[in-house]
Image (cartoon, rainbow, N blue to C red):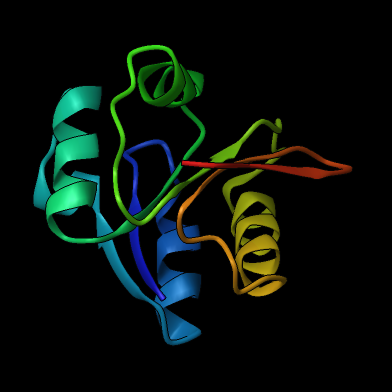
Length: 116
């Protein structure tokens, strides 16, 4: 899967996803300090599925109608450590293959998906 990890995704999650065969671009490496709008544009231009802990991404997509082609997964969880976040993120992403084309909101107990 082709993913764009926002700056708030821990390195351990990026590394684990790469180890599992995903093509992961990390905002900290490819566009440090980019605005949310720039990150969404980068995701759209590269057909990346964006993964983020940033709740503002959902608002930009839904309320301002800033769409991006591949989809977005927003994690609405509090992780006790980067390694716990890595395991959770990789597990969630690996649990489905229909992320593209959706705004997905993930918390500790459920996944809500809305078609873009």
